Length: 418
Image 1: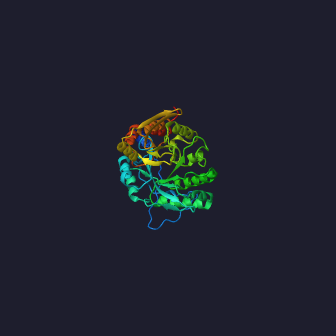
Image 2: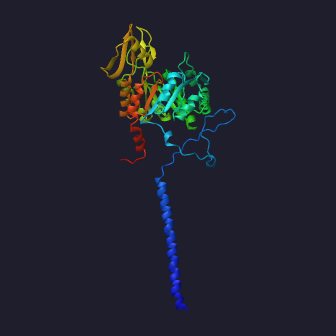
């Protein structure tokens, strides 16, 4: 009896061992499959949690350390669609809007929103107390909603282009400076902007430390809410060169999201006539910028306007539309300045009744875009949107739509050395 049972027990034991091995094998396959699927999934990129709307007025925002976030309180966000990524082309394309969002300004925006990344309407100034002063077009929700529907970031500009400049007194007072930052952050959050653009110009080099402290603190305050900070800086080829001695590019390059260099007004309305933004000068400025700022943040300003000088007088800024009308109605000869002893220029000029007007054309723009590509810079900032040569946009599309540099730069950040 016992002998007859041994074969049965042996068979049962072998069966259990086989069944256990089969279960373990299946579990390993399932686990391996899960790991493969996880590896094939794209990495999740954390995005800032947008501020929630509230029915009551927003309390003043205190600029300070980021509060501790309890993980359970953070709502799960949907995956960001690819269409919301920037830049849309190979480079960032930004444009300032100095006038109301109507007429030719709006026509230009709507015609080119598919490749525009950022629009900065000139909506705000300030006073010595740090208050935010807005013009009649500010807080235009039609612009904000239309821009966002077309995946264009709205980054309004605060400027000090005023008869009496309040910014020096503001920057010298730490309390007012801090209040100014709180007011800016409140304005950005209350109106669903994507950030703010600072255009404080023509300041004394003695304000360098105060200006730097202001920009560092403003950057921290905006970034705590996932908002952007861009800055318009004077073109220069050395640290204290030109009008930009008060702007420390090395520090600004670390705290801002885009450094927009105003590479125009080489000849300006108060000086004698000449090219507005000769290529050789733009290149010199860009070469200096690359020595102190990450090229991925350097944006080159491009002029979509010209200056018209009377004999021995102050020039008047004119859009391409106005200059083109002069050329057509007066049947003027358009001259091209290709280069001089300093290098390439690529700008046009006309004369009539003792006046002379210089203006950049699509040919000049193409040369600047080529420079941006060769130096692997972030992109361009257009002054100004509206009334420009339509051929400019053809050149931008031809140059930047197939530009692989930005995608290659992003890829290089994750690829191993090769």
